[in-house]
Length: 292
Image (cartoon, rainbow, N blue to C red; front, side, top):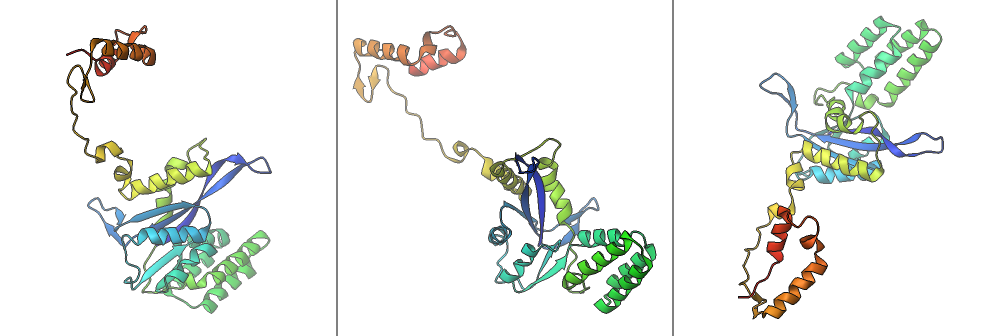
């Protein structure tokens, strides 16, 4: 499973006059990766859940939704990926068998930012991570890079070292942990392509409703949810009423004339300027009564 937060523009303005941002908490679950006939990487048995609100509540909603596909009591191994946000690690409290991993996208971005001035240190650090070197050896590479750096570059190296130290349990190489890194692409294809268009802004309720629809489409469930109720129900048979009868009672001509007068008052379209239109003629036919 992977979790991430996507910010979209809200309609309300904050105290600083800028439009507020609405956080969409995106959860992605899948059983692994495969290659399709076109050579593209696809996610096996992918499931998506999106929520708006507090992180812990969104995790509970996502795990409950994913329980329709996986029985958590029988799942022996599970990998949880994220960008290091504290709310994502709360998944481990619900799934003791899960292992946390720092998302590769965010790790690579941090490496590029912290060592963009020192390509050699970047190469050494990447190799050390790939080989599964322990933290002291990784820290030594960063300390050497910091001593060579000057000014703002030195501060960025120090920030990188602190970032990696805080998330080392999710960075250290483990042969039993699966590779992740799918959440950023899914953010774009499922949510951002529709909700972060130029000029788009949302109310909190609108963002929540559309995000749920987009998640349902990604899960292949949109047609089931969007199908009109009348298409899912069997329409009762239409029983025609004999001419000149209403609720089984025979009507006299005066009764029919009274009903016709009531219709003229209640349905003015029958006698208005569009009386010759086809839809008005159909309405007149549906409402008409005659004496047997």
